[in-house]
Image (cartoon, rainbow, N blue to C red; front, side, top):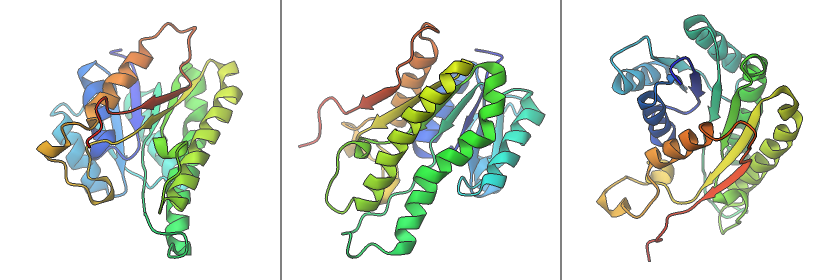
Length: 234
């Protein structure tokens, strides 16, 4: 793992940051992105004092050119790209009659189109390393709920996109998987992590799951993984 390089979008906090922590502990060099460079660089410093192992990048996944520049920056620093974890996400929860066009576009552009841009920006590098592309979707990608029309649409789409991309890319030796977490202890949707969140999935749990996936026999491909808290809060 010591020669491997991972790129994590939305890696400055929450699930993305937790994944980055675990990958670094396992010897993988990590690049994390956020929309603001100062946030990404600050998060990178929090991950490691050794800047030879971690990189903070400014990139908005809704912008194809920014994602291309992010990948180019990773290659310039590390020389290769083995793993891409497309984690950046946005949730706006309103009844469909109150959901604005701006709300809808923000979620679709971030949660779905952003995956396409990240993959397009990185796929040629992943072909070189026979790498791995992982999307972080949600159980909302298979379970619809009240006030979730826009979010459900983006996450259902994310699952479909990832599964179709898997079929397209495996001929190059690239593995593609989607991970669909349930309740995770993050700041998502206005939540403030606290001791009351102990029952939830923790961000580092997703990182450990990803490491388990990376260590599987190369002949196997867990293409869609649902993850739930063992004992939901009642």
